[in-house]
Length: 144
Image 1 (cartoon, one colour):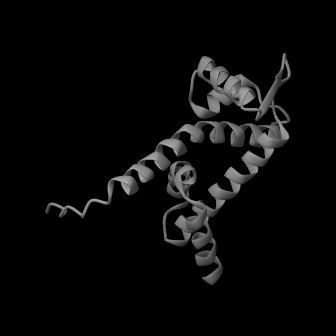
Image 2 (cartoon, one colour):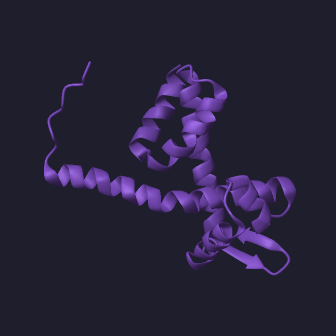
Image 3 (cartoon, helix red, strand yellow):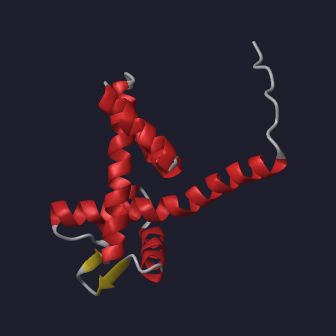
């Protein structure tokens, strides 16, 4: 059965919504890399481009390009033969992304989503969810 069309929002409203989604997509890559680098540093003591590429399922060249972007943005540094390290700004970004991820996973699990599906879905949602929605998620979990 076809879903009836909804009323279109005003042009500025719709443009703002799509603009927010495009902006989130542009920063999602940096956020994923920063979060993974922080996790690798915490668990392995180092974050090598080869390990980053394997864990993200991308080529070594793709990982190198993303790391270069992290460095340009002031989020990471790299030392020859020593791997990648986050700057203080990069560490703050990684911590914020990790907290968002955990909150989204916790809400999805509270709604009955299986853990692995919640982890997978959170990878996309965490980059697009607003602070307003995150606050509502937190209130929902606290009220349970």
